Structure formats: C-alpha cells, structure tokens
Length: 313
Ligand code: UDP
Ligand code: MG
Image (tube, rainbow, N blue to C red; front, side, top):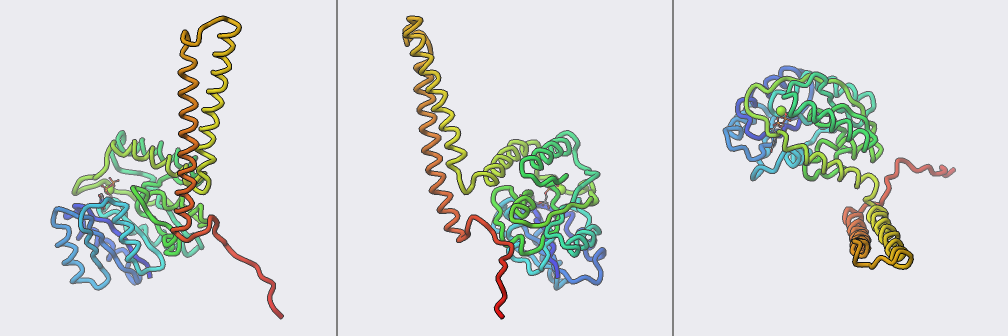
C-alpha cells in the first residue's frame, strides 16, 4: 500500500477535480489519500470532509493554522500508513498519471524517486529561471545532481522519511538528506500543468530564502558534527590578518617613523582580533550544541549499513 500526501492551502476549486483524477488514474491499486488542510480560509475543509464521507481511503488532517507547506507535508508523512509515500501539490499542477511511473522506479530498488518538471508551466522570470539556477547550485553544493528539487511530486520509501525531520521550508531537500544517509536516489521526468484555479503561494520572495537554505544545507553537510572546524577556521584567519597588520604597523613605526595613529592599522588589528575571538567562541558554543543535538536524537554520528559476523557453527 502507498500513501498520497497532499498539502492544501486555499485550493477549494481544485480539490474535487484532483481527487477524481487520482481515483480515475489509479484503478486496482491499494492506496490512501491524505489531505492536509494547512489552515485554509476558504471552503477547502468542507469540501475535503465531503470526500472523506464518500471514500474510505481519503482522509483529512486539519492543522490548527497555516504552518506552511513543509510542516503540512511532515504532518502527512507522520500520519501516513503506506510503505511508500508520494507527496503531490493540491493545485492540479502535478499529474497523478505519473504515480505508477514513480512506483515502478521504487520497485526497481530506488529509495527516493524525484519528479522532474521537464516542461514546467509557471511564470518564466519569477519562477522557472530562478529555480533553474537554484537547482544547479543545490546540486553542486549537495553533491546530489537533480534537475528539480522543487517538484513536490516525488516518491519515498517510508523508512527513508522516518530518519528525517523537516524544518523551515526544507521539504525540497529530503532527497539530499536521504542520499547523505545512503539512500538510492533517482529522478524521472513528470508532467506539469499550468495552474488554472487558485493562486500560487510563492513568488520572488523565495529567492533569499533559498539562498539561506543552501547555506544551511552546506553547513549540515560539512560541519554539523564538527562546527569548530568551520568557525575556528574563520577565527584563525582573522587572527592571522590581525597579526600581519600588527607587523605592518610596527614596521611602519620603526622603519618609516609613521606614528600608529596615522594609519587605520591599529584599529584593524583590534577589529580582527575581536572578530577572531568571537568566531572561536561561537564555534565552541556550536560544538556544545552539536553534542546536545546528537545526544537528543539519540543517534551516533554515523549510520551502519550492515555488519558482518562470522556465523557460529
Ligand atoms: N501549500 C500549503 N501551505 C502553504 C502554501 C502552500 O499547504 O502555506 C500547498 C498548496 O495548497 C499547494 C502546494 O502547497 O497544494 C504548492 O503550493 P503552490 O501551488 O502555491 O506552489 P507552486 O506550485 O506555485 O510552487
Ligand atoms: Mg502549484
């Protein structure tokens, strides 16, 4: 059995069409549909409620307020009962006819199958082009080359999701976390349709958020279990700068007879020393936090794939 997870925020004109198209395109398969109503202010809730009365495999989870797409998806993952979980958008932009294709790939042995909206039908300048750049950057930084992190339509084995907690707007990066944990990830092209009813919830304001998310990914990849290496490096570099500038100031004073107060050098020396100290202390704090983090999730800093033992006779 698999679970389809659909976050819904004000999609009243799309829900019935979407559930019909799912039900029609997946005959003879065993699955549940979880609609997560993310604090919609329109009639989405009533509409989904009606559907749950008519179909035993459609469920509604009502969140108390609007938490954002990532949290809504996490709620869906937490309540899903299938061994495979397939999130998709509630606005008819993803096509349920692609679901069997995703399932096939999972059956071939992949843990994560990412949809790639090859012919994406969104606004070119505010969405498609920035997303191309972001996908390129994220692929480079994470080491997992995917064309379309932002496509909601993906398929995950449940075990993979159990290992991952989603924060902020991180649902786009599940494949990255999964691949770091050793999951087999692949992608297939999926269909994409223009939004007909309702409004998109995202725009250009996404860009700074994505840049910051990329920073976080970078940090989590390289430095989560040894933050002092990152902060400390900056700190030491600042000390080095301070030292070189101090030497320069002394040189000018002794050999060129230039008074300290005639150059900005002493000020810079103090500035870089302070910055270096701060970096190192922040690094130490981050060390403590990293330890608390690993203890609190009760997880070692490694994951074991398999252990080989000699069999007893
Ligand atoms: N969504 C949500 N909570 C939010 C914003 C969006 O549950 O705070 C849902 C929305 O209803 C849709 C999906 O997330 O089903 C994707 O949103 P949208 O279509 O606006 O994004 P786009 O396709 O423009 O990237
Ligand atoms: Mg959409």
